[in-house]
Length: 296
Image 1: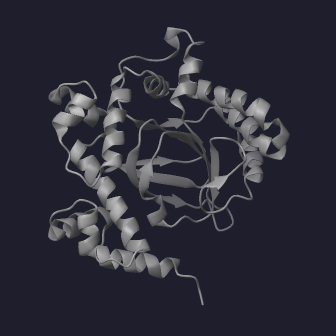
Image 2 (image 1 turned 90 degrees about the vertical axis):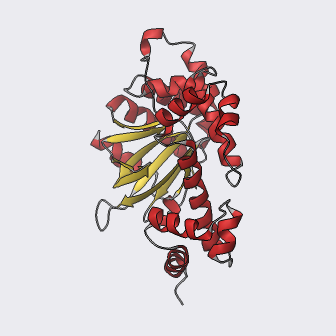
């Protein structure tokens, strides 16, 4: 697998330290040092592969570490913080990702026998061990950057192969569930979408349960199984991530930002912000702006 990784690193050498387009639909790449605040975000469904270095994502107090020996599957929108580690002084972090499209997964599932995926699992994200077959599919996909004329014809086939290899892996059931409209995971995704779009509003669990066609107790159970958070905790993390971006990009103070993201108590906002990010709001934003300010 090392030879394949070396070629993929060469193919992605022109990536920047932010999500960089590859010219291939659904495929992004990133390379180099990434500021910690840029990694604090709501991550959308994807398969994330590390080519060099390593990455740690923290979701609901749990750390998920992965490197070129593994890959990460996210099947829901989930708030997370993280950091990347370089492989060495001259070996920058490199990662690539494929956005997950439930419709494409559903189309692929029509061609798979039922025993090709597991039943009775729960959860919305996981680290899995890399296989030569999956890495080979990724390599063929990235090689299209050197043959852009082949992208329209071949990228869909290579994406299908990547999805197939993930479906055959230990977390393949997650892809199956995002493609099944009546699965608990797909219904919880409806509630997650509502919380993301209305994060500044009060969460009414009864309404979210009705949206997912579940009882309140079943909704709580499934939401926690998928996200490892309660709906209130989930919303709180989205509010805090949004507040951080506002503090960095705008001149508003902590009080105005707190109210804009839905907090009714500035002291509660300050306390929860410091607990989540390790520093109080004003201090955190000041340090981040100082670190990203261009050198004179």
